[in-house]
Length: 526
Image (cartoon, rainbow, N blue to C red; front, side, top):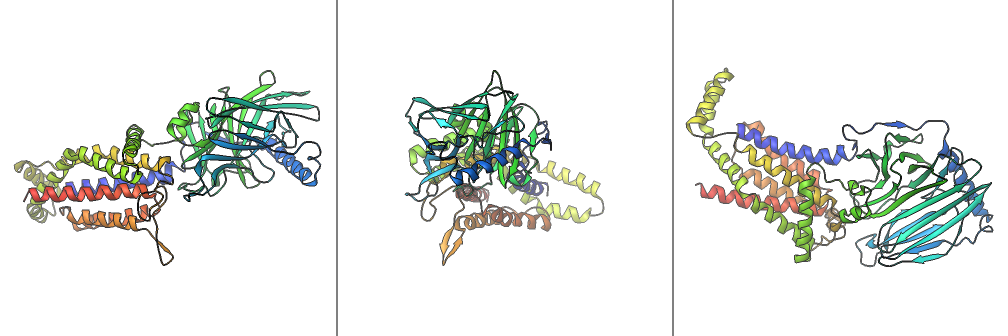
């Protein structure tokens, strides 16, 4: 009975851990000890002024007034990794297309558009004090285009003067990096103590995203994540020094990084558009930040620096997930197919854990042999639990069986299961990676179209394999516990139905290998 309870507890614990990561941690990521957040002061409302100025600029632009003041031509920056467009109105970003990533799995799909301005609100608007933004400023650029390759570096400088306020925005790009610097200089009758750098949310519908977009920030080395439905028009100011703030999906990140180390981040919604802002102190009329717009690749984030790698959260068992992800990449180089790489990696892990699982299966088998005697003891001492426990322990001692001996092997495997789960969940390498047959993207749920209906074949096979595994497991415990164990495959099937195909493939292979091992162990003990 104890062994059955341990198995049931292990299965439920694994289910709860996965659900906790999927539902709770991703929704409420503030760790224990993280700085508390507070609403932004209701008065003054500097961003409201900025929004009004932005709408004024948009209306003037529509009327043709601002076009007469500037060339109106957008500045285009081309590097090896992205194509970025900027407008002279506010010297802001209108689009960023990632050249190495496509919008969909189709071969001719256009590049993924990671940054997309909406209406009058565009990324990299500057908040210049409590009542002024540069949304209505018309900048003049020192060039209309910039093309960089490899280690080349170049810059585009925008300058504007508006009502006695002179602002310069200097953007510095590299030929191969997703990060670039923005240095600002302001000259005004009253220079503000800080400048706010505004970033808007990424466009909806990024192909291959299985998790919703969230506002994220690293504050006092603690990762903060806020779903959009938690953001309000009043906003949230994050207490503490902010390393960076931005927006993240499952595979991509756009962020503004503090260069002073004394930035203050805030999050809010304006005109139904989520936005974040990094307040940087002004020193000698200048303030600077670094921008990142690219994939959540571990190496790429590390090269950019500023602890951006914290945006790629592998959970509690990161020390297991990272080596497993590296192993997955190595196997892909050998096999040329990430689906095959997942199968090989799962098999290698199963082989490595054979001694642990063998101990568990053998202990289960020994416990099964004692079931008739345990049933008699439960009937004999059904009204005396103290005496029942004493007789049970004596039964275990006589047959040299430890009901807890199967617990340690299962606990040792838990970090491996969850670590590989997190590695596959966050591996951008699986995005648009084909496997075989109808599975042409391991990062999205598998669906085989039958008469216009998408059937989750891989998930159903996984559920069937779990059911078979439970059926082959030696029956232990009371009927209620046995029914709960048989219910687990149904629960996991519904939980995995919208999980990426790569994760489902891993779980299916794991189950099949466990069934084979379990069969061999049971056969050898007959």
